Structure formats: C-alpha cells, structure tokens
Length: 504
Image 1 (spheres, rainbow, N blue to C red):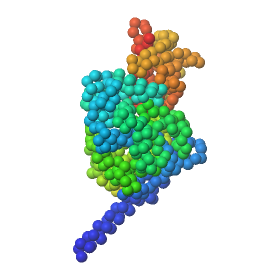
Image 2: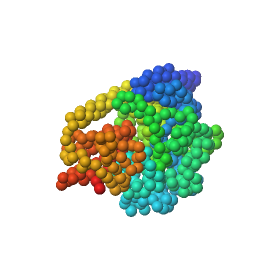
Image 3: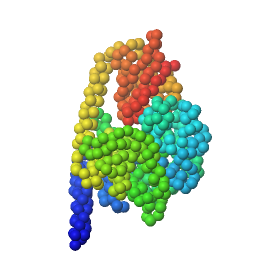
Image 4: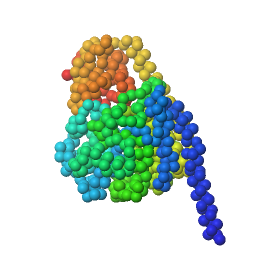
C-alpha cells in the first residue's frame, strides 16, 4: 500500500511539475513575445520548444519585413549566423565516425596550402584546433577584413595566414570565424563534395529540413524569408542581407524554426530521425567534448559555474543541468539555440533584427520554464541595460557631433589627410573629397564607406553609411608634420581589434 501511495504521489508530483513547466509557455508566451517585440522594435520572431521528442510549442510572430503585411510562420527562413558552426563541426565529427579522418589530423594533411603567421603553428594546427577557437586569435580578429567583403574564400584563407594572432597558440579561447571557413575546406577534401553539398545531403535532407539553405546568397531570392533589420538611433530599418559565403561554414546557413526543431530532436535522440540514425552517436559525443576554456560564469539568480567550448558548441552548467548551446549573429539577425540533454529538451529563438537582446532573454525565460525555475522577466532586465547603453552611446555621438559642429581645426590642412593608405594584410583604403567631405573607401568593401569630419587635432569622426559598422573615432598619427597612418576601428559586432593603415 505504501508503495502504491508513493507511486501515486510521485506521479502527481511529476504531473504538477510538468504543468508548472508548461504554464509560462502555454499561458503567457504569446503575450510575452508580442509585448517585447514592440519594446525591442523587432519585426519578426520564431520560437520552438522541444521536449521528449515532441514539439510542445512552435510559432511565428510578427512580419517578415517592417511595414509589410506578410507574416512570420514556423517555416519562415531566418539567417542563423554562427549557429551554422555546429553543423560544420558535426559534419566533420560524422566523417571521423565513418573512419574518413581524425579530428586530430593536422590541417595540412587535408589543406596542403594552409598557412599561419607562425610556421610552427602552420605545421601543428589540427582540425580540432579549427573548431574550438584556440589558434591564438583574439575574438573576431580579422572579421572586418573578411566580413561581407568581396574577398573569395581563397583570399580569406591567404589573408588569414598573414594575420598575426594576438595570443599564443592554444593559450586562450578566441572566437575565430576564418578557422571554420578552413574547416569547411577540410570537409570538401575528405568528402569530395562542397561544404554546402555535404551539409545538405548528410544533414538537411535526411532530417527533412525542407527550407534550410547552406549559403547566404540564396536568401536574396528565397521564398518566405525574413528580411534583415537593424535599429539606428532608435529607428528600425531594413538592411541588405549579409553575403558571407567566403566564410560560409562559420555562419551562412538560413533555416526556419521548424527546420531547427528537427535538428534539435535528432541531436537529443542520439542522431535518430524518423527511425533512422542520421548522425552517428559518436559524432554527437565528439562535438560535446570540452576542448577550450572560455572562463568562469555566473548568473544573477541561479547557479552557474563554468563556460567551456566543445566543437561548435558552448558547454555550461546551469542550475545543476548541462547546457549545450550557441548563439548566432549576422547582418540583421540574431538567434539562440539551446539543448538541455538531461531534460531531453531544446529551446530555439530566431529574430530578424541584429539590434536586440530579446533573443537571449526569451531563450533564458524558456530554459527556466523547462527547468521549473521561477519566472524572472529577463527581457525587462536586459532591456533596461540596453536602454542605458543606447542612451550612453547617443550621448557619445551627440557630443562628437557637437564637436564637429564647432568646426575644430585639424592638426594639418584637410588635404594632407587625403590619399591612399595601406594595411599590410587588408590592402588599400583611400580618402578623397566627395561633395565637399572627406570619404574613406575600402578596397574590399565596395559600396561601404565612412564620412570623415574633423574633431580637432589628429582625430576625426568616422560615420559609416552602413550602420552595422558604426560611428567611430579615428586617430591619425602625425610625424614630422606629415600624416603617417590612421587607426581604423568599427563596431564591436564586427570586430574588436583595430587596423593601422599607413599613408602611401
């Protein structure tokens, strides 16, 4: 009798937990998303929650493009950015499981012309090093050079080999997009297919990811595709899609939340989909093996101790649970994808503006719901922080523009700052007068430019025509009465490090 009572009590407890777990999702999620889309100025959102092999929530919210009526659905395509990395890493792990290569093979075994700044690293770097961000580069180092540029992959690879890492080999985690591009070439050499062909044939098609596209260029003509947006000084604007196929294995995939739920369910079920093993269990295990230390991690409300990186995955503990996750950001899109393997659950959030923190707030809210943790309203917390940051940035820009309006005198006549500049790896930048203003144009970013206005002395305000790159301050170096160089910097979303262009 006691056993029966215990079992009845246990079943009731589990039922109550399940009910509590789904309460936020079933009772409040619609209002939460719709309210916060307005607060964050987000045109469209797609959400899915997977539990025990089933989709317990899947829905599109808002519109494909601001000001137009077409609605987001579960089959709307979004750019998933760096959530592409897990596909690339899993593909290589699948090839290892099939006996075609080892993740510990030297890169040069498969890509003979692979080079790094240090010849020793050229010889020693492994495929695993490419996938866990431990080549020694600072996070995003080199991305301005590659990102949305006219460089081919071959040119990206060449310039990647000329760039001096800011850190020691395997000494520090530094997020390196170009390394994943090289990993894509390894897939090509091993499989005999292009990276996109292999991802499509080995993963997309078997998982019935019907709308997933491997290359960013395909979004230009794809149906039911969310438009890319950003927020510029408080105003929501549509922007062009990012064309990053020279870095495709790092971030070019577009997919729907329905597609991504298939991916999640297969990863949570040892690679099985529709009764068949699509991804070898050993491949999934290999990608979740910690390979790099990101650092300690804390949480405002719940326990969280460490942050590691596997192969294309962030690995963390959270409230006593293992979290396997990644986020993705590319022109006009930010996304979050989270697996909770011990709960057999996943959370997927896709948005079509790159100027929001709601995608991480909603992800956190849904993870807490799955874990039966209290509702925290992360969106309100994150929004307060972003508003404070936006106000600070607006004040910074106003101060700079007020300085420009005073027409301060530069250290030398404006004509002395004009001319051709060269960065040893990037290439050329020119500064010339256009319609009465100095304009900086870049060799490999056609159509993108920065208007330069004097701030006094050797400083200029650089306002990019593409808001992704920002409004920045550029210092020029002057020696012996002549301009020697300029330090070029862009928004952190693109790259943290700077470029010294030397006047020719």
